[in-house]
Amino acid sequence: MELPHIDLITFSGQPQAGHYMNNHELMQDDLAVLWHPCSQMKDYEQSPLIPIRRGSGVWLEDYDGKRYIDAISSWWVNLFGHANPRINAALVEQLGLLEHVLLAGFSHEPAIRLAERLVELAPKGLSRCFYADNGSSAIEVALKMSYHYWRNTGYTQKTRFITLTNSYHGETLGALAVGNVPLYKETYAPLLMETLSVTSPDCFYRESGESCADYSRRLFPLMEQMLEQHCETVCAVIVEPLVQCAGSMRMYDPVYLSLLRAACDKYQVHLIADEVAVGFGRTGTMFACSQANITPDFLCLAKGLTGGYLPLSAVLTTSRVYEAFYDDYSTLRAFLHSHSYTGNALACRAALATLDIFAQDNVIANNRNLAECMRKSTLHFSDHPHVGEVRQCGMILAIEMVKDKKTREPFAWQERRGLHVYRHALENGVLLRPLGNVVYFMPPYVITEEQIQQLADVAWQGIQRATADI
Ligand SMILES: *Cc1c(COP(=O)(O)O)cnc(C)c1O
Image 1 (cartoon, rainbow, N blue to C red):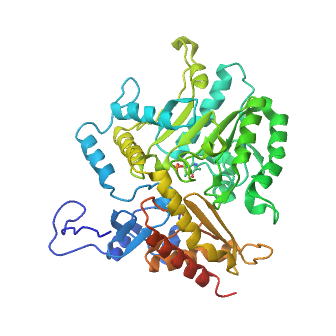
Image 2: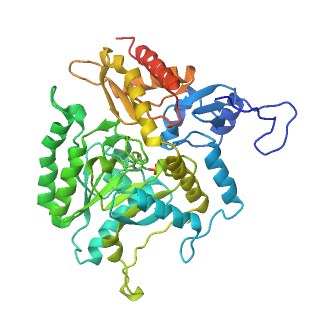
């Protein structure tokens, strides 16, 4: 897709006589004042920052005019490309009407219509929508709501949460506490509530010849035991359905979710499905939970919700939960949680435009072809001497680099093999951002088969380069 020509206009809107900022100049300005997320700032001495001037479809363009395919959807948020004309148009219209109004005592049409649409799309039984403004706060909301539900219904001893090893639920303190990726968690451990953790059904560790389903089923008794032992003090089990994304894109079988739903019912514990990353078609169905045909008690959505435009999240829950809070003011049973930007009108409108695209285009079916193309273009990766596994779940494909193919011994993290792939890809016009030793594709759904082939070629060369010394 060609990017349109842009006149010489600076960011402040003032035309400047013949001077574009370039990457280097902007990087200098940036490093003088900004502190970037998920970054050791000193790394930017070696890996330059890339200031992006504009985007179009899968493309990002920097200030030197170099273009990159956004193969990771800008941290998994972008579904239908950058500067999507349909989402843009909806936002422009909304800007002329209402940008924001507080959602306590007031309401607006985008918030109402979006809640209706989400309830309609979500697994059956989820009939209430509570907004927040990012994935982590959606998790905070679900944790608080679950705990508060039990408190309101007389189960005051329920205060704990069960989580899977290798899980990630965000980085605010509550969300971090129920996560399990040591890199994010260990430093802050003294600040976090204690949780009960159960070994993840992560199929990377299945025996050779064992199916993912068999492995996931074999691991379930550990969860069952934990529930049996602690259900009286446990509010909820929280999981990322099917793919532990930040946990190296590790995957498990839907059967685990079916077993988990049944066990949560049996032991009277809530099930929180964190679909912040896997929701909205990523795994091949609109929501990952549908693949196990289950309804969680809480469904957390964010990331792709606005098509990657604006921060917004939603927690969907059941009327049963809702009703446990519905009472006279003086009973003090109301749910106490709010963010200034709860249910922001622009963000809701972007989300509505995103859902319109799902409704109007044949997105989920079309993704099946794209996913198949991703699979085919990486078939030969399994034979690479330093690829331990190629795994896929819908529009997520991950390639795990290992030091020893037979034993799957990992590369030492200090070697930062993924960083070599990252740099190689950037040189070649692709934004890949491996998680440790795991290279993955999680592209916008508007990617073409040709572009997927390009990702695969660049990833292959990058892996070659990253592992060439051994
Ligand atoms: C990204 C992510 C979060 C946190 O969302 P933020 O918007 O980054 O706070 C929570 N859960 C999962 C599964 C995620 O991938």
